[in-house]
Length: 162
Image (cartoon, rainbow, N blue to C red):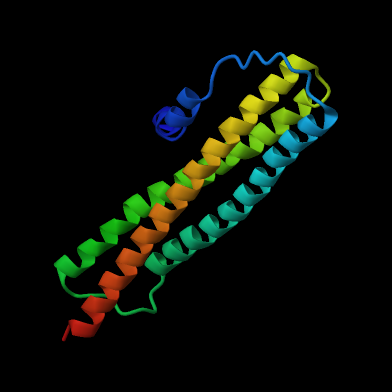
């Protein structure tokens, strides 16, 4: 299952990065620092997104196992709880992408002291992290949209039920 998640999440990002940059310019220390700082900033943003995702995920699980809320008697009304499944899948993929971004930051430390080839690798890492960051944000937005859809539907059923 992890392999399928990895292919689903990383597929478009891995295919969009060129194998070889083949740059002939010699990078300045500022170029290397700016590229590394970009990767570091994206990793920090990713960690924040992971924290939000874990909070929403934990809240949804606590809501389901909680006993102190109004449960619908109708089977049809309870079917909306199935919306939690895709929301949880998007939440898990958001967290997974965040771990990939963090591990890329860790790997980028190795590239800081190298020459041209290391800078090319660092730029590839920056492109990968940028793409994965966009993927993480999209998956977070999808999960929040689904949680919101569930909440809105539950509210409507609660208001208009007997």
